[in-house]
Each structure stands twice: as C-alpha cells, then as structure tokens.
Length: 306
Image (tube, rainbow, N blue to C red; front, side, top):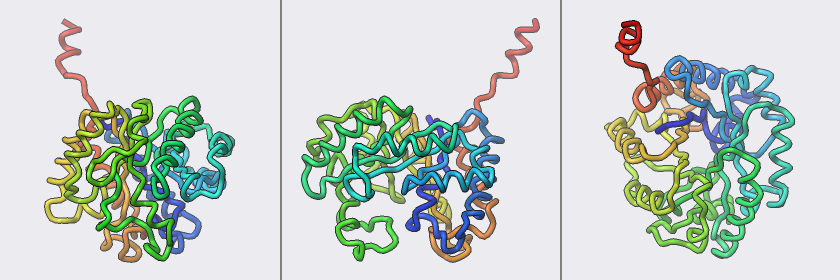
C-alpha cells in the first residue's frame, strides 16, 4: 500500500539536483507544486512529502515556503548521517529537528537516517541504538538507510565518485545486511518501529531477497523510489509493476526523482526539466497505476435510499 509520494530526493544536494542550473530553486518549486497538484487531483488521501533534504537547512525550507511550495505538501522530510557525512554530533539530532520546526508547521519525517559499517559493525550498532533512542519519541515516521549494502561492482549515486575519498566508499556499507544478505550486528537489534529506506536499481536482482529480509525484520514502513528516468527504458513499466507488486504488503512511501536526459535543461539525471509539467505527468501516471483513489460503489447510495 502506498501511503505517501515524495517529491524528489535531496533537492538541496548537488548530487541530486543541479542547482547551478537552478540557483534560486524556482524551477524546482514550480515542478514540485505542479506535481503536488497533479497527485491531489488523482488521490487526495495520499500524503505528499517534500523530500528529503540533505543537508538539514531551515533557510532552504524558508525559501521554498516563499514560493508557496509548503502550501502544497503535508510533510517535510529530513536526511541525517552524523556518523558518516554530516558536520554535527549525533546527539544534536533533536536540535536539527527543532531548527525545521521553527520554520514550518508541517509534519516532519526522517526519510533517511543511518550509519555505515565502513570502520566497524560496532559503530553502526551504536548509531542505530542512539538514533532510535533520540528520534522515535520525536517524529512520526523514520526510514533507516538501508537494508542492503550496495554491491561492490555497482556505482553509488554521487556526483564526484571516487574523488570523494572515504566519503564515497561509505555508501557501500550502509545496510543492515551485506550485499549478499549476511546480517551484520545491527540487524539483530533493529526495531520494527523504525521503517526502512531501500532503493532498487532497474531490474534489481536483489528484490526478492530484500522482500524476504524485510519480512524477517517485521518491517511495516518502507521507503523506495521509482525513477522518472527509468520510465523511458524498454520494458520499464514491467519492472515498475514487478517492484510495486513485490512491495504491496508494506506501507510505502514512493520517491519520484531523476530527470530523463532528453527532458532536462541539460542531459543529466540531476538537471531540472525544461517543462515542469513533464514531472507532474509522471506523478499522475504513478498514482493512477499504483495508488488510485478508492471510490465507493455507486450502488451504495441507491441501496441506502431504498
């Protein structure tokens, strides 16, 4: 079941949105508003999530608020990795939440939080326990990133790749399980009160393994993504159908992101689209196909009248 649609992933991060092409985020704002309106028209009961920002920046939220974006979303999502990438202490998580609460009355979710086992599995276990203690009492929805390590032969979705040094390689060790499904120390201490964020690549061979592991962990809340860029691959909708069917038992937030090269200002997945309406059309297709509004049977009213 899809409970929410998230509009983009880390729009204030150059690895996911090229703000050199959109320095004041006005293109992003137009795209987000049009997509939110399209989703509301299809299914008003879906929650719409602005997501998920990294770094956690109240000024970015103020800016989008000035463009009217916050009038069209229900939730602001945050990403935080203080043990791996952020320049703040893990015990400052409550402070980061309050910074965003000070600039919006929207609900706040944490759609990615995690710790790598890059240096030691014990570090990841510490991060899991500490962040669960700090965050579970304070927010409605948390998605731990992630379930599975990235396979070592795959490329992580970052702009500068190996030139980032150890920051790049930490992407490969964020899972509770390694890339073959072997549990790490943290897996044995994971609480199903936390959700999971797990991204799947196109025709991802890990899908069945991931579903089995999610069920073993008794996960209810899941966050994943459907790539707008992938929608233009051959047999793309067969893959989307297979992915969403496999995940239908979970309460899922679906993230829509990544610009098709031929629709971007520049031919890159981080580029703003030339026409924001194109992204709204993609959001419409996804909701129509996987989260249509539930309509009462027409006969109900007639039966009541009789």
